[in-house]
Length: 422
Image (tube, rainbow, N blue to C red):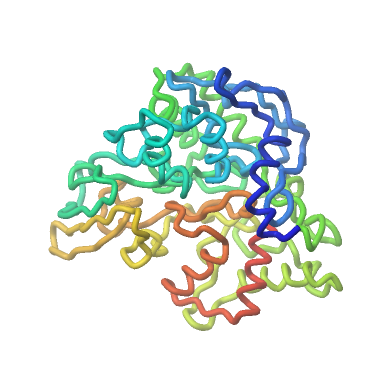
């Protein structure tokens, strides 16, 4: 079977055979499995990902999987194990086909424009186009009151955003690998509580219940159960179709090895042992790791400069970065475009998302976003906060086009092999 054919069909196989959660018209979030064994393989286009839990297995019965509010949603509605605890457009389209767009994930909170007709299957297909094609959820609201800038013009193809209402289209972040992660919580740091990661995750879970799940504030023990579950999960690519097990031959890939690592600043060294492997797929992954770690001569930067938490890829120092993913130049036609003016200087910028700037109110933070964990990338396309990169090659091309990285064709293919093996 060609990989391209596998990519198109994998979501059917995954959900039918290995997701661990059955969802149908009559019983949302009904569990037909109560646990997933550690390292249970979940297929994707490049091999298999898996999760390793410090509990000894992945418990599918806790508060994370229970609807806490009034709309049938739970944390697991948008964070599914087969998608590395994120969710992909393929999975979302399956849920639409299964329910005609009445599954809890389809809520007017995340419609392209909540004022549009959503009463028929056809209308829902049109009305949830961003969710169905990009896997992005509509967030945002009024600009922060205390800020250094104003939105002075808006071009929103969906007709909902305006100068007093910012729409932010966001992918859900995977709830994994927190033991190696930063204290920054959410793409824009909106749930961050200083350097206290647990406090940030608690804030995120609390606000999710009252926001995305449209519920009353949950008891403290419910929120604690959700956060405790999240912090047990280590998820990574387990096996590559070409290289085999990613922990074989002296390598340290896979979720179990990941679960035993401690947070340090430095280079990725998962595949050092494969540099001289006779298996060309393994050798290519190792070469790609060196491309990732090395300074690019064209711009003096490296991938690991922002992704500085060793073998995980978040920012070790909790920094957020403007990598031009919200720039006007990187805009796709379905995203809004905001013209933003500095109150003090009159300078203007055009962005599709304010990023950290609407959390801090600072002009210098506009367009900045968190660097997420890089593990299990192959299981959770599309990429960046707004899903503008449909493939990992699109991710690399973005950095070449917008941040002046220069790769040879061989370096690019090696780097992609590495990213797909994470």
